[in-house]
Each structure stands twice: as C-alpha cells, then as structure tokens.
Image (tube, rainbow, N blue to C red; front, side, top):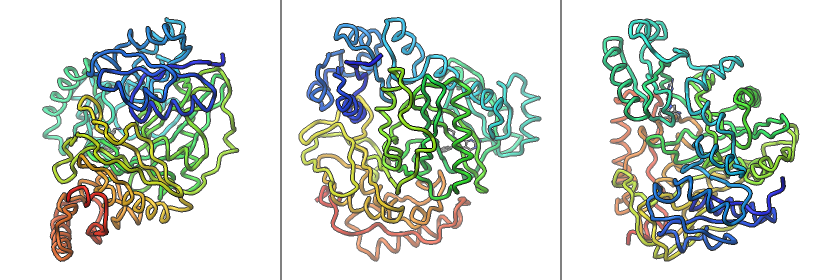
Length: 498
Ligand code: MV4
C-alpha cells in the first residue's frame, strides 16, 4: 500500500529528519507535539500537527492511545516512531496493527526477541554467529553458574537479559565475589526490569563497539550497509560515530555483514535495524545485541552509501522491495558524526539547558547538520539534551577529521554550554587520529581541564604531562603515547564563554 499520509511519533531532530524524506516522497505528514514543543521546527515543517498533552513524555510522546488516535483522526495510514519513546515497544507495535495502521518498523515479535538478550543470543547461536563465551541460558543455579564462570575465566560480566545498552551489567573480578555479585545482579534486574534473568560472559577488557546497519523487506531481501564505529562513548552515551571503521579489513567487514544479515533473518526482521558487535584486541568479533529501530547515528551510513535510510524504511513498510541490491553498495569516502549536547563537559557533562541566544550552523562542502532547534528557542528540560548532530563527509578519514574540526569551529552556539569543545578534543587526539582507541577512550584520555580556555599553552602542556603520568599507572588498556592539548584556535566555544 502506497502511503499518502504518515504520522511522525517523535520530536526534535529525528522528527524533522523523517519529515524530510516523507516530503521528498510526496507523502503528507502529521506531527504530534507536547505543550513545550508548540513552536518546534518539527511542528512547523509538518503538513498538520496534533497536540498530545503536557510536556512530560509520559503524558505525551509515550502515550500509545494518543498517538494512535492522532493518526486515525488525521487519516494517516502509517506511523514512524523515530528512536527512543515508543520505537522499540512491542505493545505499541501491536496497538498500531490492531488499529489498522502500519508501523514503519519491525514486528512486535522481532522487538520482543531482540529485547531479550538471551533470546537474541539463542537465535544467533542457531546460525553459528560468534558469541562471547559464557552461559546461554538464564542462570538458575549459583553453583553451576560459578563453575561456568571459572571455566570462562575471570574477570567475567554478569548481564541482565532484559537490560541492554549497558544497563544491568556488572563486572566480577574474582571468584570470591561471584555469589554476592550474582545475587545483587538478579535482584537489581528484577526491580529494574521486572525480570531477574541474568547470564554470564567473559569480560572483553578493551573492546571496540562496531555495529552493522541492515535493511530487510517483506520479499526476503536482507542487505547490510557496512559498519559504524561507535567506540567513543561516555557512560554508554555515544559521542562520536564514524563509518567506515578505521580497523576493519574488507574480509572482516564482509564476515560481520553476513553475520548481521543472519541475525536479521533469525528474527524475521523487517525495516532498518542495527546489529551490535564487540571487537576484541585481536579484531575477533562477537554478536552483542540488535537494536530494532533507526539509530541516532544513521547519517554516517547514509553519507558513505548514498542510501536514504528513512526512505527505505517507508518503502519497506509500504510493501515495496529494497530499492537496491547488496552488490550495488560501495563505501564512498568517510563520514563522522558528533553529537552536540547542551551539557557542560567541564562540569561532569551536567545538562546545561537554556535559551539559544545565538545559533549559527556550520555550512560548506561535506557538512550536514541534523537538528530540531532554531535561534531563540529554549531547550526543554523534559527530553534528551541533544541539540544537534554534526555530520561531515570527506574523501578519507584524515580529511573528514580535519573537516569536522573546521565545522566545529564554525558552529556558534551561545546560551548554554555544549559538547562541541569536547568533540574537538576528540578530533585532535592522537589516539583518535591514529584509530587506536576502544570504548575506554573518554575515561582514559579526557580531563575536563583540557577544555578550560583560559589556560596558557604552558599550563595545558603541564596538565597533559601530568595526565600522562597518571594514566601510565592506571592500568588502562591503551598506552598513552601522547596526550594532546586541545587546539587553542579561535572557536565559538571560547567565544561563548567570554
Ligand atoms: C560487554 C563488554 C565487555 N565484555 N560484554 C555495554 C553495552 C552493551 N551493549 C554491552 N556492553 C558491553 N558488553 C562483554 N562480554 C563491554 C561492554 C561495554 C561497552 C560496549 C559497547 C560500547 C560501550 C561500552 C562501554 C562499556 C562496556
């Protein structure tokens, strides 16, 4: 069924992103909005908009009935949930279907299977996909579990089956702690997720997080759109994403891609999904989990493949086949995304919301900004404090990093602290530039002092030397060969502080 009107059940940059593809496809659009989003760009850019309640998402963007009623009342045939909110909620998927509407996303069954890390691992195992050694069923017996942990070797990781994205994980360093940690993990999982199922994995100490984008249609076609490297993260919040990864060989890329396709087949997947892998020190990869939504970082994949992922999602939901074949895809150039948050990196990344008194986006060759704000707008306290995603494309990785620094320096945001200066720090860092980094990058290399613009160059150097000395004794996994002070060029970040 070709859609003539769709509803976008989200806000901010991702709502705007979805509206753009719909508009290009000649599909009319319906936005929904809460009290505080009355004047938001996603409301103005849609053909119609429906007010769905108070600012808290529990009273607006998360209320299934209100979303479905809005779609029915406006005559939309389908709903795009974006990411977050209801995007991975099986009850929502079922309610959409029961209302005679189409969800632009996977089935409730696929969401449920991948929502259970144990079910996901079991499905992957059937296809011979590499898994981190450990238990593949929920732990029911402490003694049995302890034995397995000893076979696997400490340190091990206890994970909650209903967790994911780092929630409900616990490192156990030695067997003497095992029983107590297990007990705590189970009771924590029970209270946090209503499901006390936990399992054990060998703890991979210096992993890279690499994920594969897949698309699957209703005609049996499943393709992979290469990888995104997402290792630069802070407390499970991704900060920088890039495609392709600096470390994958074509052979490894293909092997991971084929595994990702198998995972998608294992849950009869439909639409756009992401299969997450850990890559260890030997570049051996292990399936972790599958995210059953369009991801924040999807633009880097779009930039290197030329594929409009939202357009493909909509076409797939209409029942059309994917518009290209696996062999049509090539990696073209290199793309990097940084997430610009209204947070203060000098103050433990505390949210620093406010009014965007000045807001000037970077422009020029190879620069894309996906945002949901304009100058003069308030950043609401009710939602994620992400202001925008800054994405650059260039011929190769070095040029992309240089372009990102240029774009960051061109970006002017006044009215709140932002993570832009922090992102520049990453772009200038030797470990990032060389591609030799893992998920510990931020914890290992970042010191808030690096961003204090009032420091003299000598002070910055002294701090860098001190940081280096401290790291040398910290037992980290990557040797700090050089700790770079941040670029001290004229920058909006500095201007913002003056
Ligand atoms: C791991 C791991 C080490 N060993 N599993 C965190 C998020 C969730 N998707 C899985 N995660 C991890 N699983 C084993 N067996 C380390 C992490 C991990 C991590 C993974 C990806 C990106 C960032 C991370 C940060 C800390 C820990």
